[in-house]
Image (cartoon, rainbow, N blue to C red):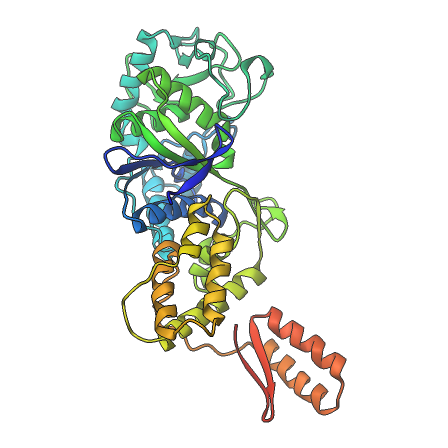
Length: 455
């Protein structure tokens, strides 16, 4: 089989292509003005999963992931952009802010066992590429200099605009802020800025043929991806919130420059909720990877939670789910150790088929659970299959499990259940068993009494 994934543009599951045996991938990276929360990180796990599947089946991947350190962001910009605002708040140079949060981003990726990209181009170091692409778009009549001196993309000149999101130019209403709050110089309300004049802005500006200013958000990804991946991307990955306008505009710029369809397959990860709500500062429920670690949980418990859900389905993450995933990791690591010490691996076709058909990780994990419990598969074979599966899942299953105790609350429930059983209050005993199992423990009753282990 070949890995096939749902393509947002065509609305069908498509096989991933390659060029000369190499699959080119571009993943929209972070804007480094704050810590990435777990919802952001889910997207980067998606690109990592795709890469691992391709490579474990003998393919090669060239992955580029940009770092947006110029600061402006779609819809969020009103006056001073967020990177400059954060620099002011922390009393630091904006580029120092960018480097601080870029380093934190790479640390989080390492904790989640995300393989390093082949290149992490920074927007601030790719200004010449953007200026060259903008100049080319002007020469091909896809861009113009507005009445305010900024350069805009002429959306009407690109006839297939809307193929990714389904949005059509004639249906887009005037007044919607696509990127900046001051775009009075453009000809049509759906046009967008490729280069903004500096105006009163004095930081993070560059010299250009159109005067001092800074690049538009969308042109960054077009310029860097086309330059580093030779004008063609087999798989383009990003969060669903980037589908419009970012990826729609990026496609228009790139295709207008090359004269061809530049991306074979657009892959989007869906939104992540936490405890039933969208993560936001105002709700006070933004969860960072450091928050998971501070609770004593393995950061890879977040990775396992993400794998328990389809990436193109909205997901609701909870602390309970993270605790159960943490216990599951301990259990699998313990068993993988008990099954032997061999480093041999074995391909399980049912596991691989689930993964290769639109990244059905829940079905793949269910297959592992069946293998774990099977009495017809030897321990050495189980270990070999788990080692192979871990090349895809990235859960570090051959790492020795930590020796873990139980919480005070769990011990109190065990004690209460012991008393309930001795007094033959079976309904209370059953209720306590359910509560203990929900907390991640596995309960067994025998002649010597109740015994527990982590599930």
